[in-house]
Length: 506
Image (tube, rainbow, N blue to C red; front, top):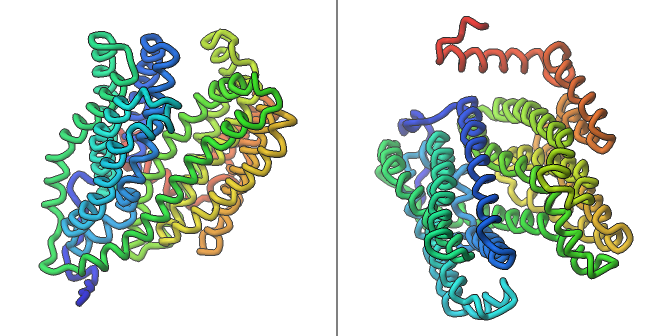
């Protein structure tokens, strides 16, 4: 028999080491900045120490781990941000984690055994040859460490212990760089060394997290009874399933245009050159997406906390304010990258990718729109309407395929980038429409933030001008932020400064 609880029956004080949303964003930005610096130098060293073939094999192996990881656990950890707070308030956090682990174990076992038993076929699929079966076995073994690491990071994020989540990611990046350098230099300069280094870094970071997360779980309120396990699975699986579908659609979003370039570019001999130029144009914009993915994931538990407490209007107001401020920050970063394009492409890359430089404004544009999609979809997730996210992504994917098939044979790389830009606009528009139906309406300031990245296509001076006007309105106008939003932002900033003894500045 299922037992339900009111929020008054069980102690619902926040878990230990909870970070506020403002603290979360500060910690995120600081840790991410350092992590990206470490990752940049690690990538440069890997490029120096690995030949082109081994570097390509490492890229394929890493992409495979990122794809098969969520599939192996049915994306169940991705649902932590939505449900951990709910079950913690009921006193069922330990039951929730045991049920989630029990749900993940069978598919992980099946996937792992499948990789071992069909390693030859997987090698052909990934590398085009059956000579790399040892690398497939190595990747399969490292997959277990990757799964455990991601499970614990999602749990730390859902518990709003952002300091731990960001620390884990930083530890992972540092250990990966150090261990990778040791293996490549002292053992062998191969993709196998890189895969082992990444798997080892995940295990080290996971070991660091266990003790602190165990303390947080044991400090949570405990109910003497809980709901049946099957009912728990039926509740979690649909949400996780839609998240899994969204993850697959996002991955397809990232690769479909390059795949179509290879197969449908008018000059097949230059197709890989076009893909190389495209990759060069996406290196910097993808940093914006990686930061936004972390920020959106860390935002969800805070919004869910208000949503579950019955403060749904506060949840939507916080999301709206965050979308404006974060969207403006994304646009500012895109303007900086746009202005620095000559230095990046002509100096750092020795002028090797002229087409990549040409399409940079459009890759920055659609990456900004995709980042805003990741932020605004949180309202749909709070409302447990994850299927609508998948529908929005699928609609954009269909547009991307159709436009790429039409434009790539005629315009090559420019056609692919244009198709992807339109596809991202369609997906973002669908998310906004779905949000509106659920009571989340964009105001004038948010719509302006969505349109600002279009100035990137008019050149760096137009983008700089747009940024200056937006910043002027942010401080002295009333279009981007309402007076109430400015007051809440002022209180949040002054409150954080007061914690460091700087409150008198305000």
